[in-house]
Image 1 (cartoon, rainbow, N blue to C red):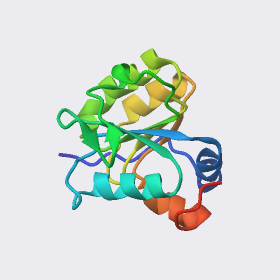
Image 2 (image 1 turned 60 degrees about the vertical axis):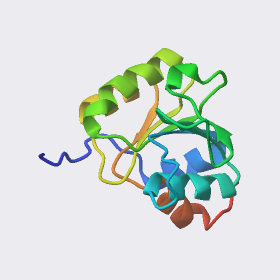
Image 3 (image 1 turned 90 degrees about the vertical axis):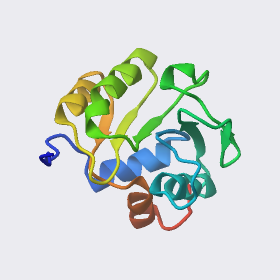
Length: 148
């Protein structure tokens, strides 16, 4: 697989503003396995004061939160969609975010880039972050486990 460089991305100040102005983060591909990056990131964000919303094909609860099978099933507003899925799934995820109409930020985790999906999300009014770990960026910009 060829690596794609992000052509659309937020800068550190934009990311800091994101963290200061959001409350709810849907995490696509949130594993119940505590040794997986998605679980560690979600736990960190939860401890930092954000509401996490697991989106995963199995399980009823992860980290004490109800699990949804898709973005469309979530019955309340979502600020960020944080994606732990392969980049080839990003186009469908961008479409699901657009269909919801309430997602403010389309975030592809470290190593994950899909410029076509990013462009779709940006054109629909979302901020886009690609190839950045949300946990590492939060720690770097706001300090560990602090929610503005």
